Figure 1 (cartoon, chains in turn cyan, yellow):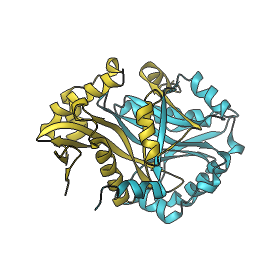
Figure 2: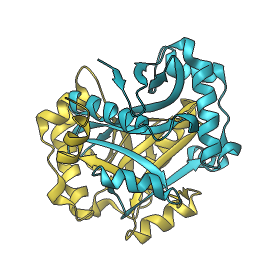
Figure 3: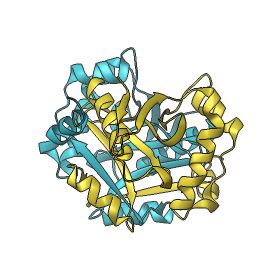
Length: 171
Length: 171
């Protein structure tokens, strides 16, 4: 059911990642960060991924795309929530296909699979963020019907700013 | 510990919401939507809030701010996840203070409380989105050390576009 014949005639398999995939996931995260020109931001290691993805509390879900048993890409997502809908959504944190496997519709298959999970789980939305310079990706997402939330900007507290905020009212 | 003397001398209490607060939460969501000029987007009702916030799976957490036992505002948040950090974060979906209770630092207290939870839970980040026209709020967040993620745009599949995506490869 999750095996598909893709452009070029190869077999694509989408499967839920297991703890034994940690090294693959870590390698894919590093490749994605390189592609996004954000390699300097990667602090992840195998132990931290194991704890947070396959430990007592699992903060995200991971799908692996395989072609002929080779990892071709991955999707990582978690539930968010809309108060206006009073329904959960899915937030796609990462979607990545290795260069050697591009142009065969694998990214679209991963995205559609996550979209189908969102519908099956009663989610109102599937959301994700795209780097503004990534015009080819943006074109694909728009063509599929995704709408940009142009009126909103995301802000982040991290590092010392988060520590300062957290202790602001301590005496 | 979660009771504070605020500007003007009143007592502010921050407490975790319970199922008996559903009507209050719903009223606050409607007020927030009015403020954001998005009242037309609110589909939430009491049953859906009860199912998703206080049911078998709780998709978000809610803090209520009270002054003299009157609801003054609320914060609603959930865990997100960063692959680059291999750590969870907190995402603040809603932060709202009723007009009659503004100017006393209640919003800052709610925000700092969520920030302290993020630190205590080992989160790497506290994130939230702000409407671009809401300059007064943006100024406050920047002054507290929040950084805008200016290079990113969030995209959303919802409604028919999500249905179409989900069934794209079905035969």
